[in-house]
Length: 564
Image (cartoon, rainbow, N blue to C red):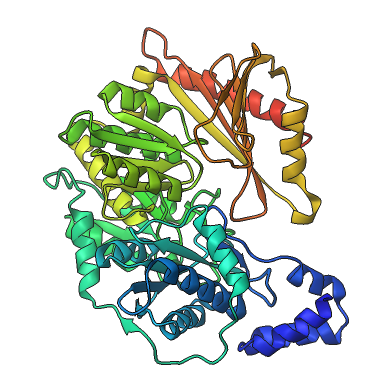
C-alpha cells in the first residue's frame, strides 16, 4: 500500500479537523515526500515514553496515534488485569493538544471497561506517578513531552507500582497496538475526576522528605519554565517553611509556546537567565527551576561573586551525600545512578558503607532497581540521572522535580546554618573523592542521515588506541553486552542491551556516546577525575580538570568527524 492510500485511510479515522486539513492539503498538493515522512514508520517508545512532533500520520503525535496507543495499552493490560475493578490514572500537561489527547485516553480506556480516574486540570508528571502507586492502579498515562520543544507532545505510560514501562512490556504494548482496531466512536463523558485530597496527600509525602525543618533562613527564586509545576512546587516549599520564595512571573503561567526560552529544558544554556537575573536583583540565595512537566529540577547558587548553575551530577551527588550523612540507617541503604552519570556516586556510597548500583539511562531503569532493592529488604535512598532527574525515597517511582526542589532547599538551608554553602560542600566532596568534572555535547541530526549509527559503528570497528594522547584501557559496547580490556580480556556487562559505546582511558577518564531515546540527537558524555593535592586546593584541581576535559572533548569530536 502506498503512502497516498494509507493517508486516505487515515483520514477516515481522524477526528481532528487540524490534522485532517493538514493531510488533505498534502494529498491535494501531491506532496509525496511529506506523506512518506508521516507514513514511513511509527512513533515508538523511547527512553521516556512516546514523543514526537504534532501532525498527521503514524510518525507524528495526533489523536489517531493516541487512540491506537491507548487501545493497545488496554489490550495488553487486560491480559494481566481484567477490566472492571482495575484502576487506570490519566493526567496531562498544558502543551498544545494535551487536553484533547487526555480525553481520548480516558474515553478509550473507559470503553475497554477500566475504572478510569483522571486529573481535571494539568498536573506535574510526578503527581501522576504518585497517584498510580497510591491507588494501586494497574497503569497510568501522562500526556506530556516533558522538556521537548513547543511543537512536540507525547505520552508516558506507567505500570502497576508506579514506574514507567520497560522492555519487554513496551514491545508487547506495541504488538497489541498493531493487532487492535482503532477506536472511532467514543463517549465524551467517561471516567471520574480525582479528588483534591490527592494533592494534599502528595504534598504530605514530599514534606516528609525534609530533614531539618528548623533551618529555613534561605531566600529562593523559582521558575517552572512556562510549565505546570509552579503552583504545586510553591505550595510544597511554603508548607515546608520556606516563606521567602520569589517567582519568575514571566514564566509562571503555563504557556505551550514557551516564549522566553529557546528550548524549555533547564539543561539548555540560557534557560535559567531570567531566574538568575531576578536572584541577583534580590540578592537571593538559591535558584530552582523545574522543566515543563515538573519531573526534572535545576539549581543555581552564588559562588565567588557569580552565579553557578549546578550540573545534574553535582546535584545528585550533593543530595546523596546529604541524605546518607543525615538519615539514620546502615548498609541496607542504597543509592543508584545511570551508566552515563558521574563515577563519584559510587565513591560516596563506598564512603558511607551503603550499596550502589548502576543502570541504563532513564529513570524507568532506576525505578526498577528501587523495586528490586525493596524486594530484597533494602531501601533506595536516592537515585539520579545526570539529565537533572532525581528520585528520592519511595513515594514516587520516577524522577520528581518537586520533591527534589524541596530537598535542595532543605540541604542548602541546613548547610548555610552550619556555615557552609553548596559550593563548599562540593569542594568537600572533591577533597574526599577527587574532582569529578563532567561535560556533554548534544548534536542534533536528521534521522534520515544515520549519524548515530555511523558514529557507533566507527567506535566499534575502528576503536582508537588513544584520545588526546591518553591510552584507551577498555571499550564497553552496551549493545553487544561486552567490555573489552586493552589486554585482550572480555567481560560481560550486567545490563540490558542498548546502543551505547563507552571508552575508558588510563587516567580514569570516560567518553561515552549514545543516541537520545526521545529526540534526534547524538549525546556524548565526558568525565575526568582529578586528584586534589595535599594542600587541598580544589580550585587548582578543578582548573586542571577543566583543561583536561576541554582537550579530550575536542580530540574526541575531531576523531569522530563531529568537530565544529
